Image 1 (cartoon, rainbow, N blue to C red):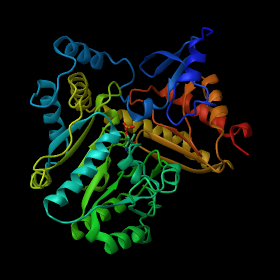
Image 2: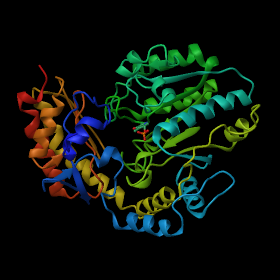
Image 3: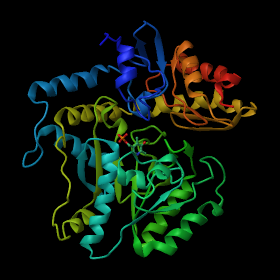
Image 4: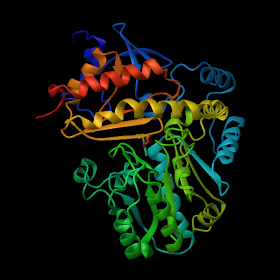
Length: 430
Ligand SMILES: *Cc1c(COP(=O)(O)O)cnc(C)c1O
């Protein structure tokens, strides 16, 4: 066997997200990351426009987050959560309860966003078991994304490949049309018809509604009208259906509010948090619910909540999440996100006039350019790297979601690269 270079080894043996082992897309080797800069093996520096999928909100190699990890490692890196508790988990849960709505007071910690979604769905199902009602269906939105595990996949957009590939494997749920009215446009009552119809028809079999608040992320980067979310809350309350809000992508300031549901001034019954929870350093997620739901879960025949991951409440992850929340607590993020939004508006909105552009959507530290034609992801990503930026488009979407600490000239560089990229015909599939 010949000795392979790292690149060849990776290419031949390692799966990346949604990749093929047979003909993988090229991968770039990053050897370190600092602030908003990623350093490639060949020495090239890239400005980061992704925050590693909306997680690294304070930038990379953050001194305070690093220190929190080091301090915790010296005490213990992990301890089982069954029958044992520890200060970092307690501090984190105290803080999470403090910053989320008053009614949310019972927390389940888990390892990743998808798992926290599984847990939220299981909570809803066990709640109805506790009430001796047979309710096994969920109502979700088209264009939604909730993760890659099986229950999470079953509430993702039904028209993407997850459902076509997994037909027969996934439980069948209900899907309302994706909200069309965008954040800043006038509200049109018709936008809610599909949801209203489905919940009226099926509420007796619905355990919960599950959706992403205000921003639909990986399912299409749509930014919708808060009125839609208000109506969802009203209808859920009216029909006695639980509301699960998946804040995994939007939580911790990304949309200009600490949580995106605040744009609609509503509260969920069950809340999922992940991604930025540890400032992009460790995998950790949380599912938070009300005392009433938690108590009812314990009335089910199991008389406990049926879940318990091995690495539940990992102390390093909890400690760094606490420090992430400490950093957010000084409220610098509000101005940072506000400035990013203004800069995105100023430079991206005019692109609406380009013939290649179908739509521009901006909210908080998220800027989305939707093109008319499918993007050639390999070609455009290569171009971005040549330009010294890290932006990873998908489908017809180029989006920017930089770390909150990004400097004005760094964001300018990201935006400049996007503008150049849009105009090149080779960046589209025919
Ligand atoms: C990323 C994401 C998930 C899944 O989280 P993982 O940590 O990747 O499992 C679920 N819901 C939303 C809205 C997400 O953006």
